[in-house]
Image (cartoon, rainbow over all chains, first blue to last red; front, side, top):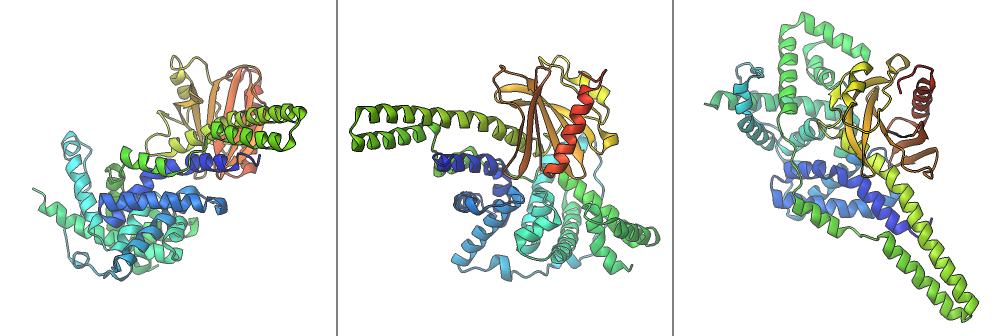
Length: 184
Length: 264
């Protein structure tokens, strides 16, 4: 019915988009590395998404929202005159370091007690990655997107997603080994 | 395959993004190369540890409220008001008592149909929302098993209905498990199936009233939704698989449901 199209649209948008707020906020937090900036970016993302909802044809809501979110974050970096997402040096000292083999975690009560500390440690390791590698890790491991969807969000071919992810995981693994060695 | 190629492809293997041919290639290389085998093991372990860690952030209630407030909220009531305003303006220009009656009736029917449409849509939307919620981490199943004789008793005592649990694995739809959910404010049984990477949720609840509309076959926000009522139960089926496959699923589900001696 035409008469309730606006209300209908607003409700359809809420139902379709709001379930992904945690995903949107999470990517925003990892990209901006700051809660206040992340909240602003998430809000701007939802307002932009609503404006473009008429032209939304799928395929999936989550990668569509994350694409918009990424554009919002990039625009914010550009506005600040920084080029964090584009010009950040992809080389990382830790990546070339030789480190002992990574230890598989044991599912024991002891490690369960260390879980909180471990979560924070992993977050810091992810936060420390250069932007383009951090982005691909978050989209894959935390937002749980497929390679195709990551390619869509990051605006690069699937082959680039694969090589970035390989590089990102190598860097993360090295940093992880170092952090684990440093943990008392 | 050399180690450099394997270095990239083993990640696709871990992420289940590799076709069968490449899976064989990577596995063959890994059996003969201990360095790559160790990498595969380490990256798998890292991925598992990351999946178990709490790395996802939850949006704060304040942010949710801010976004809610920033989105327009035209309610059915508001639309109804707008309609009656338009109708009364027409009435004013018409200037006839009959016109007023007609407009009044028109306004009333518009209000009714607006509410009616919402009523219908709420349930379809709710089914999709419940489906989306189920896809959030850790929420898909309360009881996880492909064994129908485990799923069905699990629901006993948790619901006022006994939902049919049908094993369609042999027909290409794997039974994943079941959970309790809520649909339209009512507790519902959700039976979960998988087709390739796609999840199918079947929501079963006690049928409320006889006037609920019959079969629904529609697409909402990229999800296909099917609804029918049968044997005093309401069935809502939601998935992101294509319409043809979901119809196939519904046909097989209904056929099994109607077999003599079928689980009821």
